[in-house]
Amino acid sequence: MKSVVAEDLVKTYDRGKVRALDGLSLDVSEGTVLGVLGPNGAGKTTTVRVLTTLLIPDSGRATVAGIDVIKHPEKVREVIGLSGQYAAVDETLTGWDNLIMFGRLYHLSAKAAKVRAEELLEQFSLTDAAKRPIRTYSGGMRRRLDLSASLIVKPKILFLDEPTTGLDPRGRQEMWGVIKGLVAGGTTLLLTTQYLEEADHLADDIVVVDHGKVIARGTSDQLKRQVGGERLEVVVEAKDLNSAKEILSRVSGAHINVDEGLRQVSAPVTTGSKALIEAARELDDLGIHPLDIGLKRPSLDDVFISLTGHVAEEPKVEEDGEAGKKRRRKK
Ligand SMILES: Nc1ncnc2c1ncn2[C@@H]1O[C@H](COP(=O)(O)OP(=O)(O)O)[C@@H](O)[C@H]1O
Ligand SMILES: [Mg+2]
Image 1 (tube, rainbow, N blue to C red):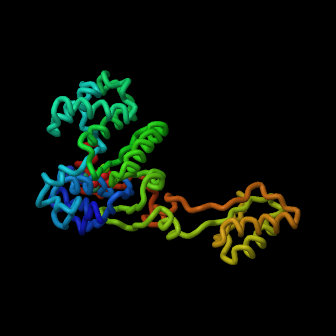
Image 2: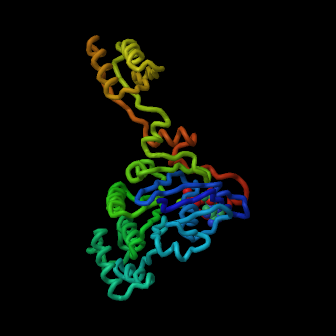
């Protein structure tokens, strides 16, 4: 059963000059996490806004929990939670007051709103900070409060738009823990991120988005395999470089890579640790003690670079022209 389906979504801005979504399709199976991975400007937020009924696409179709997002937005809103890149909480109010306010917005009784606020503050380790205004919160605490506000009515399907962007490593770890807890509780999740590591860590399936299109999909392992399997890497002293080349060439049976400066030889292998042991044994037989030897799996960074030709963190160079200039000035 598919909880979210998007087919051929197109969305343009600035009278068609900016093609934010250019035929984007994806789906999320019930009870799973889909990571939508892409650099700045790829179309992630636009996708989330369409799926959460905040934006009508120029063309294409989408359903959430089987409900058409364009025809029945109010029904879709009943089954989803949304936590955005830009939090909707009120800075001047306390965490407690914010959650009560959201509870009332969702038509909970005063009593039910209190019960839910208490539960959520507890769940997100915010009980101690409950009576402090949000503006005194750390970035991580703020994100957790924003997330808890989106969980007031226990949505079956949750959308998180870059939930850890801008958080420090500790805040990110905490957020990951919180998200894992939600997923373990059965929530279906669509999560956007610029962080390859985050998608790797949290998502069952990943779609890589660039320029408003899905350019690759699969599990993290499948995507990594797509760019090639494991590599065996050996670093030796200069005098042993030629022997190392011969050994790796034999063990790998494929083209080897040599970095004379680093005195590193590497080659693709298909037999994993078996190849590693074989190479280590042969080096040892010749009395060669490598300074470093190991198997390297391709990272999602390698995947991203090989798919898009650019690194994920690199801000996209905007097209020239009025639309691009206007937007740059706004930032
Ligand atoms: N309101 C808007 N008006 C004009 N252009 C926009 C607007 N919102 C987004 N864009 C453009 O659409 C593209 C996709 O944006 P967005 O969906 O926000 O990407 P992401 O969330 O992946 O960073 C970008 O080129 C962005 O500059
Ligand atoms: Mg965004």
